[in-house]
Image (cartoon, rainbow, N blue to C red; front, top):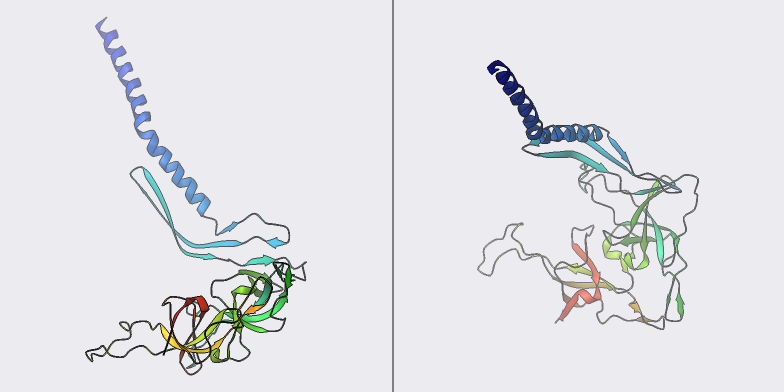
Length: 287
């Protein structure tokens, strides 16, 4: 009888231990399975987004992957992530017609060398802010008046840095943007020749102070960003409800004080700093 009791006791203990281990360690097994699944999914170097009619799928490339698993959590980190942001139009489409007040700009190539002839790596090349108008929309309606696009095809323009939508069309990079995102017309290689559009104003920035009030020489990093300059050119003004241009209240030659972080910065061929901003960003005229 005693022997039977001892055998039953060990059988019960064995069943209990097996069940207990399953309850305690199953979360860790699940973590390992989840980690394995994530590593399997992440092993692919390309992730394709759902395609649309006439558009090729965008591509996301992952060049390397690292994995860590700790107490009850899983983390996947990537390095060298490359995202192809431009929408690619399928070759079967040969024309692209902008709608409304939008224009299609063929983007100029990024500068590959400095003015001193030093070859720039792709990471150091500045993002282009100019290009050629290759197509325009039908315009827009203001009140009861139809207003055409003020720029024509073939015009070289400069646009706001982060404006528009990039499109790869006919093997070249283009930008679809609103007419109001065009800063001005630039037919030369020097920004001082820019002709501002709408309510934009071209300003030559005054040089930053080289010394403090006490005569101490300032380092380049400690120089305060200037917020004053001389107006070089002004746009024709915004359209009113009757479709007529309203002239700006500043004119070429004015010395003005403007919002410190407004507008788009440019460097002239002579090394001078320029900024293009809206007239509403000018706070005062100095005399």
